Length: 525
Image (tube, helix red, strand yellow):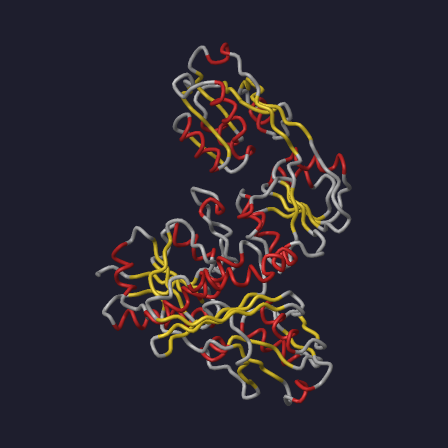
């Protein structure tokens, strides 16, 4: 293959190490490669929402987006961080030979605390926390996050901590495993721990064929079983789950575990099957756990007593909920209800030269009332990528779009054909677009395409921040609630409305629900 293979990776030391291993193996096969560290998704806009594509992994979605935007050819991941269901259009192409699967305790001074009643252990993993407390129920677990290097530094700096738990493969690969470390053979690792995975676009057959040469079949078999067990058991609920499969004497040996968050309840399963007869091993083991109280245990974890700290003024899908950091407990409700109006035929009896559409609701009203053939618009101007996409799918080509109404108004002042526009809008219109146009001698014919109705609920006192998606969601919220905490806003128009009452207003980098969620995560990490 003559072209250079662009290898996408996160920019941490461990991620770069893993990417370089893949790079070396590809170059050994005679291929030209280039490492592409990918840092942020903030300035990337896709043709479809992240939730429609199934992009959910907090550690993988940056690379997923880069790949779908054709910025990279392959992505290198720690397989344990990859969601069990990959985004549409992305496939697993190879799993490298597995490294050390164990968890490792890095301790300070000595190991005597293991026999003591009181000790403080640091980890950010629910699975490690639950298994540690199951074995040492009187110990205290504290939260520890960050990359491998920063976590080791935090352990060294904190005088009160006795130790911290790491993946043995992680600290081993980059050569920073301290002498004061022991493998925790009794702790069942995360599914696919210690394995490096390569993904590529499903349609890129050449890249897939090349990467398949790096695949280690035994590792692929074992990690597939572990991830299938996780997928069948987890059911969208974040839970302390461990799984390990290995091959010995032509047999698949499997062990799995599900625990309560505090480790007080534990359900174990083991299974041995001949290699080649193992296709049902993950399903059998997951069902075994579920039938012995696993479903009830997962329901308890899912509906824990954590109080809501973030509230969305628009109902969130389950896929969108999965995007939140685990420190976020989000609730949602539609604070605004939309009622589509009947648009009288007299408004459309002749071709309209210039049309402005600033929301998908206006598009829905138009296509509910009329067919695309009946909507004879010469120039269509709109706000937002998603609105543009809907218009071009349902009505016709968009002449020009901008990210907000003010920017569109300023564009029209300079470039509009003629001196008159027809604006399909809501009964509640809070943007400056008509005012800007009329000040510049452009006549605006407003047609009320839909009605916006406030439908707010009272939020709990535990809520620290609110997610807003339009000026009307801000107004609706304030009908029932005080302006306190942080206002996370989808765009500047919404933010301007929030600033009238909220002291702390933050604006997403791109006008999507997923970008607002990313903004929330940045605050709570």
